[in-house]
Amino acid sequence: MSRKSLRSWALVAGAFLVLAVWTVPLAWTLLTSFKSDRDVLAYPPVIFFEPTLANYKEVLFGPTNVLGNLVTSVIIAVVTTLLTMIIAVPASYAFARLKVHGKKPLGFYVLATQFVPPIGLIIPYFLILNQARGLDTYWGMVLIYLTFSLPFAIWLMISYFEDIPREMEEAALLDRATRLQAFLRVVLPQARGAIAVTVTFVFLNAWNEFLFAVVIAGAKVKPVTVAMFNYISVEQTRWGQLTAAALIAMIPVIVLGIIAQKDIAKGLSLGAVKGVSRR
Amino acid sequence: MKRGHLKLTGIGKSYGTTNVLRGVDLEIQPGEFFALLGPSGSGKTTTLRIVAGLEVPTVGQVLLDGEDATTLPPGKRDVAMVFQSYALYPHMSVFENIAFPLRNIRTPADQIASLVREAAARVKIDHLLQRRPGELSGGQQQRVALARAIVRKPALFLLDEPLSNLDAKLRAETRVELKRLQRSLGVTAVYVTHDQEEAMSLADRMAVFMNGILVQQGTPEEVFRRPASVDVAAFLGNPPMNLLPARIENGVANIGTASFAVPALASLGSRDVVLGIRPPDIAVAQGGIDATVTMRENLGDDVIVDFAVGDRLVRARSAAMRKLAEGDRVQLHFEEAALHVFDRESGLRVAR
Image (cartoon, rainbow over all chains, first blue to last red; front, side, top):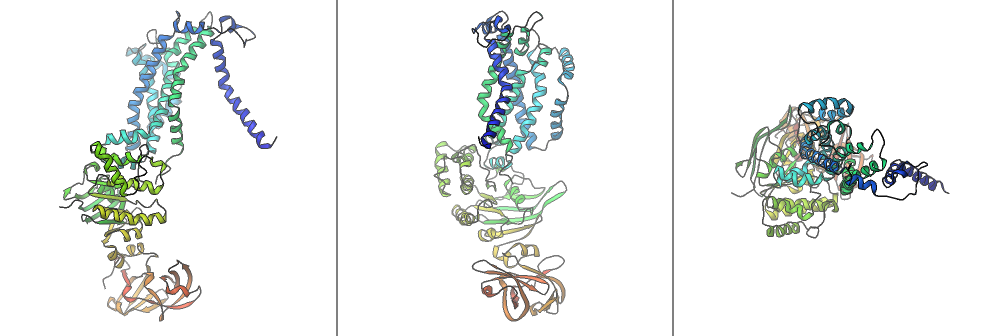
């Protein structure tokens, strides 16, 4: 075997190893979701078993179903994403184009939100929402998520907007477009990749969020991440239903990933080759 | 009144405490091809952007066809612009790029197609209408930018170094076409460039900018023949004018360790000046100034020869010097009528 092919074999093996870190737990979850309670707890674990849809039936239609919670999660994630984008797109464009005070502090603020352990924010947020009667409400959840997603989204998109040559807008203005037309018809179509990337990140964060949800949500407004938690109780952990619910909860994320895939790839590479044809 | 008249009075622009433009007065007649020439940072592009409405001058007034346009936004002026980077819209086809200005002024759909085709045909890109800008060569992109600018028949056509991204051969070709296009449209063109050759060949009249000041304007011939200052003289011509600090004393010029008689300058008395002589105005002649060939550069038609005159360098350009070789000792004659005299202190041209 030549040295080169040895090297490529080693690379492939390494790639599989890295891949396994994600795929093995996922495969295990998938298998478990089709197992009966007896097979789940069998030791040594069984690979071949008689598959059952009982877990999915229970999770979707049984007395402990999470269907309503899925709807709640969709509402929260979609509203959070929509509001974030409606505010963040024009905001980041303004930050990129105008001499706005607070451009540098914004970057620091976004970073600073990462310094603070979320656990340190939960109590103040809980107290504030409690006073404002925002616990166990949609607006309370969305508001809390916006405090993270909005600065993050603005900060993420600024550099993309900065990369769109200013001359292109000036050309549009000279071509008799209004400022709004120039933005909507010249700038925005070129920011598609950036918007796709941002939407995906913001939606994912809102969809997957658990820590704040578990504190702020209640009986009325309970996202699926929190609802799933109910399958783990003092007496027993209902692994079959937990994994089935987890897999169902992954579906919207996968769908979004597939839809946005092309634009995301474009958006990521756009950021990588900065200002190729600029003076 | 014919469309496309432009007048700038007392235009100045500063960002904070830095003045990028001071006291620019300029009048451009309808149908004229006018070049703004200068090195980078001289204020020529800022002037163009002020005309376009992309910048508002700090002081001064912009008159377009007799109306005050100083603070008018770009879309309210009847101007079109070709950018150095072309600034095509990458997500639109060539057709849509050219149609964009028409759609913005709500041209009826049935007219758009024919107007786009007409503009594209003028710059010979009518076979590329369905392509995206990214699929075109630099020269083709440049033509799309031109077509987009002419499609709605503006009164004033602004060009910001439109040829600088093309290779040398294409640049020379496009230059000719550009002039022909401007003439056939009868539109006023304001053309920014740092390339003196481009300005000389294209412009009916031109303005030379240095350090934010309009230092000279006139026909290319006037500016080339009678540069108003040492800076302008040094900027025009290839190779540029020889500029020799000299002391004139009773009709004798002393340049460094060499000296020669210039009876025509006797009237200047004793004075510190800078003498200018263009490379083609130098000839080899018996009884002239002693010089030694230090370098010889073959251009094909002509040769450029570097001479050491005393302790100074003088460059000449001519076909007759082809026979010279490095190390040759010759005598040079400076065409007296072709001598330019500038004041040493101010750098301004001295009347003679």
